[in-house]
Every structure is written in structure tokens, then in C-alpha cells.
Image (cartoon, rainbow, N blue to C red; front, side, top):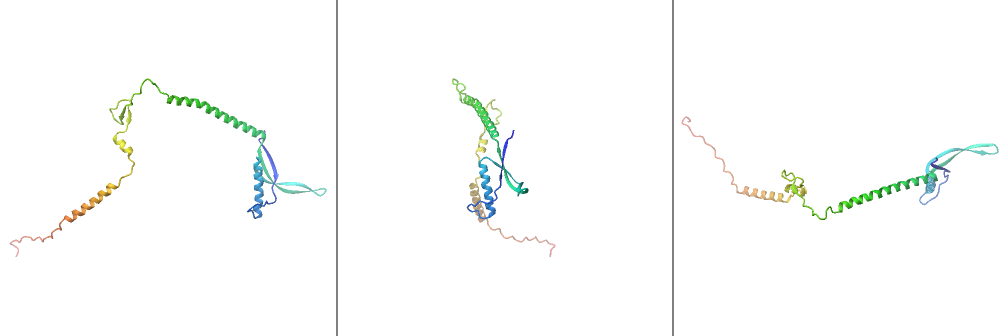
Length: 199
């Protein structure tokens, strides 16, 4: 089964004028641009440009070979487009059915989560114990202790203002202590005692 149909058209030979397009090269490129966009709007996909020989009659009995530039396009056949659309519709239908099948199960689960277990019996309060307590009853919910709560609430930012105040106070105290000190007395020369043998 053929999936594509092809179309071959002659390449433009002249440029097309447009606003802002001045040079011959730009006008020729504009011609190609317009042709490709026109074909794409009809569903044709550009494949390639070819230079092919064309044998043509010349005079009564002669022939000459001319080289022609052509552009090759393709698009899916009508049958292939119909088959692709049917396959896409089948996939979407299957996906929709799967979603609808999953929806009641999810709704039932949500209802089970919301529904009260026993309306007659009030729920017993949960037993809690500090995490790591060796004497905690079995089945107790572990909660963080005082130190752990302080660590959890700590944002990790060090407070600097009390430290700077203490430093200033220590500097002031040190300067006061330095003022109170008396200068050291000059050292007196030590004289050794005279002995009788010395003259």
C-alpha cells in the first residue's frame, strides 16, 4: 500500500518583487519562499530540488537535451490520512475509557478516606512519647523533645548584636583596668655584701 503521493513542479526561474527585497538573489529566494509556503498550505511537504535532463525536439528530426530544475513534494495519501485519523481516534477513545475506569476506583477510595469509621465510638486520644524514650509505651507516636524542638525552630542565623555589645563592654573594662595600674618602680641596683677579704 502506498503511503505517500508525490508532486514535482518546475522551480521558479525569476525573482518576485516584495517590500524590502532589493537584490536579485533576495528576489529569487522570495520566489522559492512563496512557492514552498503555498505548497505547505495544501499539505505538501518539500523533499528536495533536482536538476534533471529533459530531451526535447529541435527542428524536424533533431533533438536536444535541456537540464531542468524541479522541486519534489510529498504528502500522505487520502487513505493513509484516513487510517492515521482512525488510529488517533482509537487511541483517544482507549485513553478516555481507561480514565473513566480509573475514576470510580479513585472516587471510591476518596469516599473511604472521608467516611467515618464508627460514628458510635469516639476516637481514643493518641498516645505520644518523646522520641528515643526507652520507657515509651508500645505503639506511641514519637514526638521531638525540647532540645529537638529548639533545633527545628532554629533558622541557623547567628545573632551578632549581643556579641558586639559584650566586646565593647570588655574593651571599656580593659581600658579602666589599665588606668588604675601604677607605673612600676625603677629597679634598684643590687649591691652584694662586702666581705672581709675584699680590700
